[in-house]
Image 1: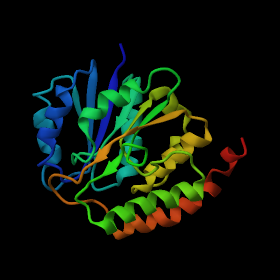
Image 2 (image 1 turned 45 degrees about the horizontal axis):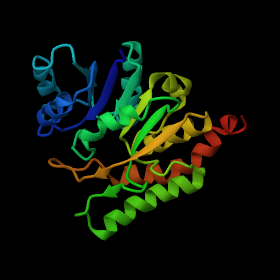
Image 3 (image 1 turned 120 degrees about the vertical axis):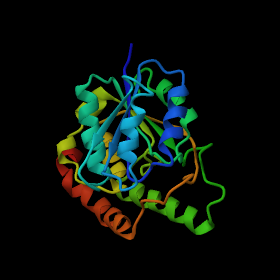
Image 4 (image 1 turned 180 degrees about the vertical axis):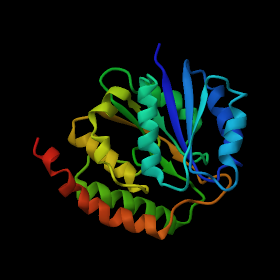
Length: 243
């Protein structure tokens, strides 16, 4: 029996969390656990998450952090906790319903055999961005992904997406202590490390929807970090490129 831990970072996701967990735990997945990593949300997301533990006994855990410390550190801490708890599969997803929950079984099924990480991809055939997004927003998303893929010479089509399921054995191969990206470029850094170390991946097409409630966490600072850090990654991991 394989334990799966799904890590969901939260910051002001109180409106989404109850329905999100209800949909996740409706799935017919044996030994599925959720780890909420909350950055001291002012709207009380962390408090609500604690209350919801009674609804899902033994299946829901909460990591409370002291403030808004960023996406990258949220996932790194979550990975460490999940691996220490004995999870054989570790997932990542957003709390805003942008990632299709019903695709989780398909992503898990893709990990059969020699696949190490299954990626919910917007940019393989069958994948799609929210049809209601304006042209400029779709263009910005596509350009950001193309930019990172081109600079790092990655064969992965969706390097910026955050809907992924890893075999824990593959995550243990990555030097997580060296990962410093803390905005959405964290996803790029993880994809780049996986590629350099020969982690085998498979991309599953998804429809990426706009969030249901709340506001986007994307900011100009996060976009600037992504733009310059992508260039830095080749130098930071030059020792791995040479392998």
